[in-house]
Image 1 (cartoon, rainbow, N blue to C red):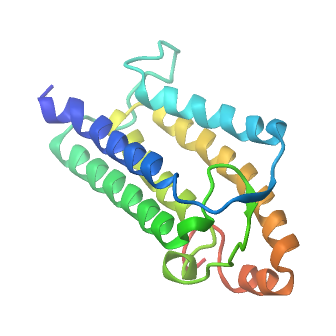
Image 2: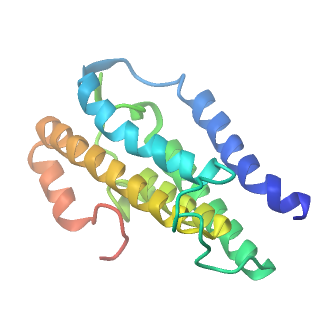
Length: 189
């Protein structure tokens, strides 16, 4: 396996994580936070998804079987999807600015952001991460990648439901109108 195949995806995810960590310092103070139990409920499937993608092998029948052949074409498409997804998530994170939080929260002076990527989907960070995870799953090329996508989608679905409740509580009719006209995860649907 060429070196680029082995290190490109970890390097992209590492660069994203470093940016995420650095930018997490410049946020507004929290006035309302989800419970630890609710956070645990969506973190566990997300950690499992990460494991399925990062492990060399999971040695589980069927999950280690390939669903796509390893080829330069597959690698190129997978790389492009992963990079595009991570960049979309970064764009959303930058646009959200100091309102961002890794947990479901309401910030002091919280603003309803409806421009930039938020004009296309209500949860563009999750959209971007799901695209990036799909790209990484394609790079793995085994059914465990598909399982990782499903687990990540489940995690984000649980988290976005809670976020929707917090946003509706905070912004009322303005958020209900935004939710009516902008899809949650997939643009134009």
